[in-house]
Amino acid sequence: MGDLSRNFSEWEFRCHCGCGEVLVDPRLVETLQVLRDRIGKPVTVISGYRCFFHNRDVGGVPDSQHLLGRAADVVVKGVDPETVARIAETIPAFSNGGIGRYDDFTHLDVREDGPARWDEREEKAHV
Image 1: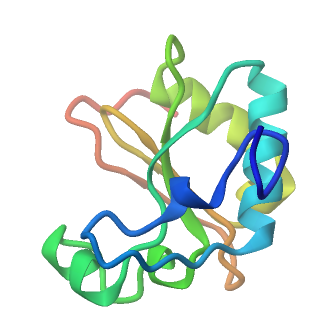
Image 2: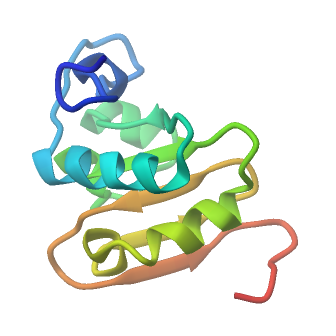
């Protein structure tokens, strides 16, 4: 059981650089919980909050939603990233936020400045 929601805990969103910093928007957690409930499988956060230095080191964009605690890169065992993105499109906070498609994960965010979509897969599927 999580300490932020039924299935998510604060530690999952900590910066991976070792600084120990964490910032997570409650709307992100609530919306990830909706996604998990719809998929019916655990949603693993592979990247949540990023401090400025970690974001720079991983090549994140300067205005990344990860810096604000509003984004998570996620994987779901047994579910391809495209399917995760399509399900996320049915959830208002993600459909009004950001959805990025990658080969091995899906970026999801609850940005406040309107929808954003991008596709960084090697072989882009018809979306």
